[in-house]
Amino acid sequence: MFKIIVVENYDEASSEAFKVMKEEVVSHEKPVLGLATGSTPIGLYKKMQADHKSNGTSYKNVITFNLDEYIGLPKSHEQTYYTFMHENLFDGLNIPEENIHIPVGDSDNVPAECVKYEEAMKEYNIDIQLLGIGGNGHIGFNEPGTSFDTLTHIVDLQEKTRLDNARFFDSIDEVPTQAITMGIATIMKSKKVLLVATGENKADAIYGMIKGPISEDCPASALQNHPNVIVIVDKAAASKL
Image (cartoon, rainbow, N blue to C red; front, side):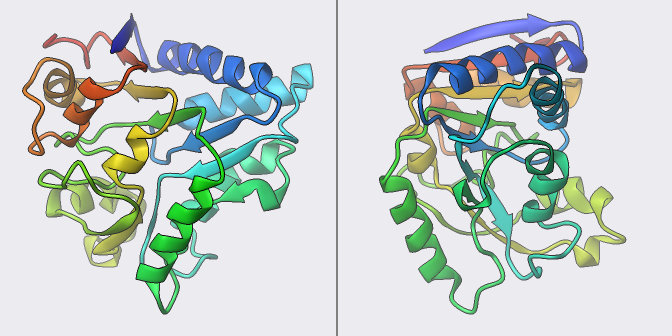
């Protein structure tokens, strides 16, 4: 079931997302947050840091699980999601490092890391899973054609996704060709989903997610079967609804 909140712009979307996220943080004794990377959540993360600094909101009992990580980059690489999350969120909060979970993409045995990550999540129940959405409807790195039954797995990144992410690298050649990602079935286990999207380039994907048929052609359409999804979109992303 979708609760759709339409706002004017990116900053308003970040503010609305922050309200939702803070409610989860303060209403649970040990909140379990599923987190995302990319440009979309940065505004939200900055508001979480500012709130912690100004208002003293504590994150010391928070447990986090990130959606995905590139395969083949050393953890210290400036474009790993490990680096992204620390720079954009964790370094400004008081989450203990041992409470932070990010898939390991620089292992000699990535399939084993997929199993290990899925097993770690079984100990918890993610209270809220933050998502962005790709222009092709992907959530996490679950590209069109991904089975809705997938758990944490290795994915070959489509050319469109690599092109979308090439702006963060010196060239397209440096963008990894594979990633480790929570599967769609993994995402669907979360108690609540918070999906944020802004910009006209997301309008088709948002329409497909909410109004389109439930189909592996649009991975996000699986969320039509989730009982609690909050969608925060600006007017441009909502323009085709």
